[in-house]
Length: 282
Ligand SMILES: NC(=O)c1ccc[n+]([C@@H]2O[C@H](COP(=O)([O-])OP(=O)(O)OC[C@H]3O[C@@H](n4cnc5c(N)ncnc54)[C@H](O)[C@@H]3O)[C@@H](O)[C@H]2O)c1
Image 1 (cartoon, rainbow, N blue to C red):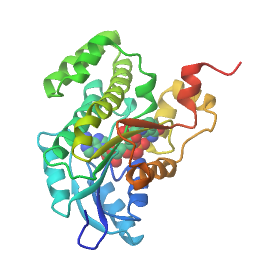
Image 2: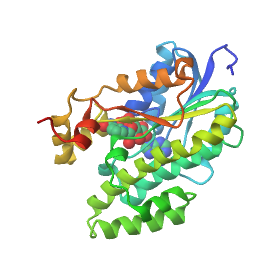
Image 3: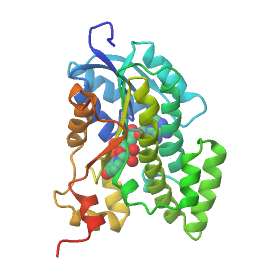
Image 4: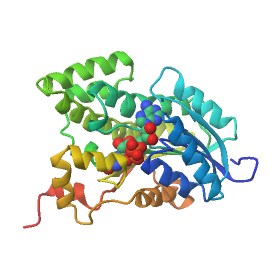
């Protein structure tokens, strides 16, 4: 599974963002990279920085991964540079960045579309790593919503879930966006577990990483916009996560050392989820 320069190929989404670019820099140590993001200027800057750092950039493409056929187009372009060894999916929106519907499209629909695109022809040995969130672990499961999240994702499913979340948020748009974030990240955890068996039969692995609060544009925006985020940070045993901590875990998951890890999630959250689920030390 090699690019023409002899390195393994990786596709990185959200490549101009804080976590995506840190993971790209790390995976670029032993992969040639195909980078994609919706942000054209940010993608150009990220690719040029990585080239300057000596990383092999096999290609770049601007795309909204939640758009019709866009994930398929990106996967085909990346595979055109060589069979994929690793996929790191970091594209996403936080609650402060969009409406419930926009958050569901970026975090749930785009992830499902990307995985379906990969499944058109899974490379044996492929590892896909989805950047989920501790929000997916903290989200209170709801049977009716889980039934929607387990069914195939479509624009119609997004509309009906957004309407349900609007009702649960009593018409408060910020509450609906927060619920959309939590449930879309729970959807990421569920899809990783569900796909492990069919992927394993084809010799491919899939796993997720659940960051806590990370020092990126998104993390800082949430800290400014949501008082709850600052409270969570204050309770986090190891404090704010560095994007490089996520990248180190991604590199491990993409390596042979993780060959028996699939259908699982690794929390890189400084201990926040454990504290919040178990209650404060007494
Ligand atoms: N930063 C945190 O504190 C934190 C915590 C938990 C989980 N996460 C998750 O980590 C991932 C990366 O977050 P980050 O902190 O690097 O944020 P970021 O805003 O720095 O990066 C996200 C990137 O995704 C891109 N993007 C957004 N929507 C897209 C779409 N529809 N198609 C293609 N690209 C799109 C953006 O342009 C941006 O470059 C997200 O899924 C986020 O939910 C972040």
